[in-house]
Length: 157
Image 1: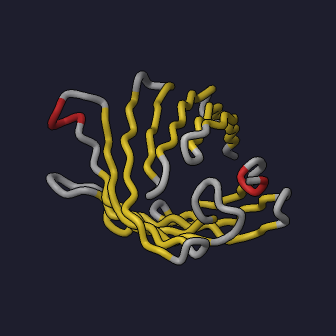
Image 2: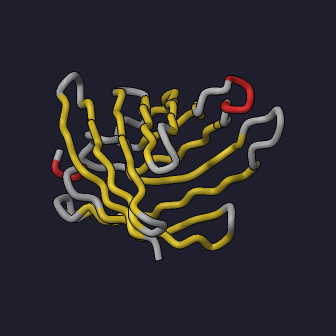
């Protein structure tokens, strides 16, 4: 789907727990809001609660989604640098709510990977951080057992 091929986002951190911005998908001439709110921060022994909105899942030609997830860094409990998350997402393209989830692994101080289930497909992202302002990622998107590869670039200022 063309919409997912090129995506530009601009977000601003309005508070330590809230970011909002805009997403632009030029191939679909699609503009929409982005928001991410850490409603409850992670505390022992409880997970964090995060809610937000973005474009619908990878592979949809249009639509918006709203989501809520619980996430927990398990390194203190397991000794492993892992942080799973699970939750639900409503997508307007399919007009359905699905179970979502994933696992982030910190391989080193600068390299991490995230595997994420969007309710339909499993995707993977491997990221590295360059200095304090730049990030580079490899995106492996699964669209109904067909894999597509992409790159992501993050710049913070």
